[in-house]
Image: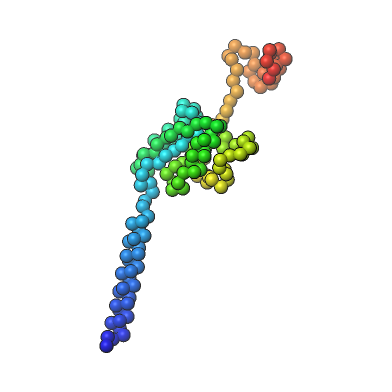
Length: 159
């Protein structure tokens, strides 16, 4: 007959071993992110402001994360094709969307989207604020919005 202290020690040793093996298995199953290249989807044609920002961002992210960040252009349907691609991608953090204001207003513009904007995406950060500007031909007399409006009656095509 074994003594109670020996049985208790054996049980504690077995419990500690099981706990340690469990931790080792859990640690092996959880890989450090990123363990593979990241895909940054730009839902606009190459060469535009979103593409330029994405390429600049991908260079910096690649350096800091130690993994390539690949910019992939998926333009079309007012940026909804690229957004749909990301919405349906595996939710593992390896497919990101370079979004813009288009995505927030798409639900108002399109009757039916192939994804639910609020449920399909989670915001990470603002990358840049890109102002839009209105310009005229340098030979025009308009130098501000009011001057352009004042010219409207004289134009062949109304504003």
